[in-house]
Image (tube, rainbow, N blue to C red; front, top):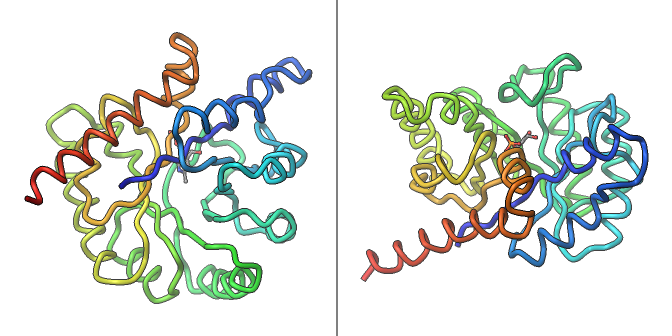
Length: 249
Ligand code: PXP
């Protein structure tokens, strides 16, 4: 079974555009839950352009879906994360001027040292830690060395190329990285730019356990509603499950 995490940041982006309280991220969380997602994803950015601190606390308190908190590794975010205690933290690179998370983490020796310390703090608070990585062998190797709980492979480049011919090369890079991770004990997730159009090939990544999708789910929701939009992704995941069950006989 491949779990579905839905990123509801852009519900907050829309709310913030008017400064009021509509649409409400918590109501979106309820809809996402009822439509069959397994996880909520939020990115608390330094500039708070979408999800805000109070949203995080409310979503955690509601508690019907585990929370995957995306964040940069900064003093401020570490403090908030250890206070909120989401089920999972995904470390992402963050630049103020970017529109969305543009690439995977660069794991320099300094970054690895800081991650190691934060991993120990997460373990103490029973929070799982994930790293958002491009499918680059050295980055994957660093994650294995660090012994984090999960790696989320960045599918943005694949999604940008799909469905042109060269997306297959990027898909092969994702498959190679997944195979390397499958030989370790690290869980595999994938996310960024995924949609009903380009999701199916990604489901072939060995030992994939989770996909995290935001922009396409919310874009589609404008036309069909959030419930149906989440269900359309869920149906693709379910169809993949029955397909693999059939082929394993
Ligand atoms: N996973 C991670 C780690 C992300 O940073 C994002 C974007 O916030 C997503 C998944 C979702 O990407 P998208 O909005 O393109 O579906």
